[in-house]
Length: 184
Image 1 (cartoon, rainbow, N blue to C red):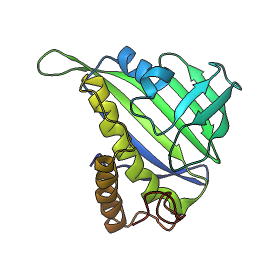
Image 2 (cartoon, rainbow, N blue to C red):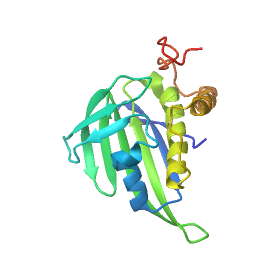
Image 3 (cartoon, helix red, strand yellow):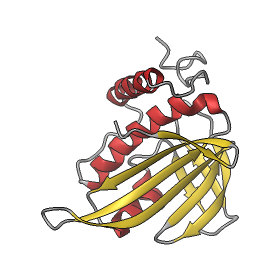
C-alpha cells in the first residue's frame, strides 16, 4: 500500500497520495493529463478542454454514471485538477531526481478532495488500484485497467486495510451497495 492519508483541506476532508514513480516527470505528466494515457489506468474515460474553466466529461465506468466537471487548474507540466461529481481531483507532478541506476524519477501528488468524509476508505482503496495500473502503464507492462476482477480483489484488500487503520468509511460502494453487476 502507498498509504494514502487523510488530510484537512480548508475544512474539507481529502485523501492524499505522494508517490515516487520510475519515469520522467514529462512522462508522468502525459500519463495524468493525456486522455489516451489516462484511459489505461484511470477509472473513467476523461475528455476535457485544457484550460481553467474548461469542461470535463467522465464516461465509461461500469459502476458509475457519466458525469461532467470543470478544469480547476491546468499548468503543464506541473498541475492538473478538475471536479469529479462533488469531489475535486488534483495531480501535481515534479522531478524527483534519479534512481540508483540513473533512471529518472518523478513525484506525483494525487489529492482527492472529498465531498463526503465517509468516502475516504472507499476512494483511497480505489486510488491504490489506479496507482497500481498507472505504475504498470509507465513500465509498459500493458495494464489491464482498474475494473478487472483481479483489480476488484486488490481494491477489497486495500479497503479492508484502510478500515483497519481507522480511515473514515460508510459511503456506498458502487457495484455492491447499489445492486450493481458486482454484487456478491
